[in-house]
Length: 184
Image (cartoon, rainbow, N blue to C red; front, side, top):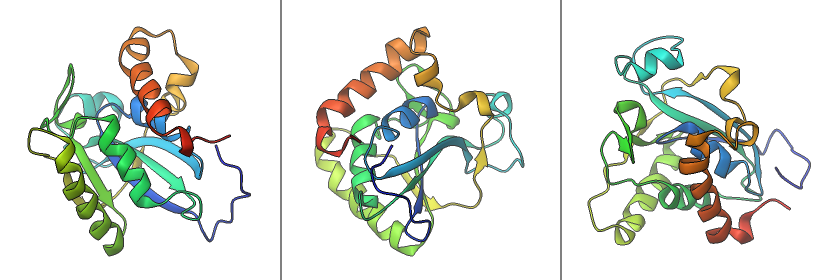
């Protein structure tokens, strides 16, 4: 994922919700400066949620990815620029045919600086969309890791119909649009 040796003192988390976490994970894993991407759940009221519970739409959680990145190689703002390109931030609780609160657009901030940057990125993204952006920006209260079978899902299942029809086009778009940010 990255070229520099990771120095744990420089690594920073970012937590984003933009529809199915398989899509976000596949794109962010390609970027230089990203050291890890973990699918999970955030923003809800149930402890230790399962995928089935979250898909049941009663936990309040969104599907998220928690990205561990080195800001010396890629900035938080860069991650957000990618975020606002690879999903539709104008549809409430929906990404394409994926419908429900678990598919909402959200930026879960880890500190006050991330909140400021997130609000600036959201404002800047408005000009790229005809409809109002509905992305929520709020502090992360807790990240719950998803089940291990969701890790590297697209890489392990590229022939899965959902991956072929939904994830692959997002990955291709990101490769083209952010070629200069791809890991070597």
